[in-house]
Length: 179
Image (cartoon, rainbow, N blue to C red; front, side, top):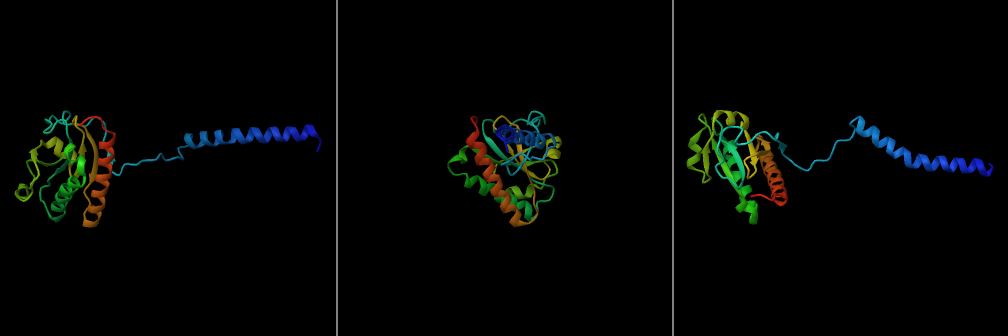
């Protein structure tokens, strides 16, 4: 192979080496083959949901909140969810003062469980109750609903979800400049 042919081959190889990754990256992004990384365990809530949008007053402004709506019948899974809410709050350690576990009660909630639990509770309207349904929700100090965790039936899944809640809450508190 003569030197001019050899130099052309080298030039083409160098160009392909730099151009091919750019072309592949463009294809991956255009065809949405890349699923972006996510570190949160809960489901993010759309930005337009807040106490204000539900025409509710924020019961604890300037504090992060873990909120759980007591369902119509508070069975064993519900009671265990309330227990995990309290335990998650305790597990926050020194950050515990920045977060308050709250129990939401609607007009149809089973209020008999409130006598056994030493957590603060407050009344919510039907519109907010429909939105919360059977979830634990993290609420920021400004009253915006940030993240929700679906109610899982069996106890082992709830323990895992409690760990996920704790992980997400620690991350939010670390990054937060409010509350």
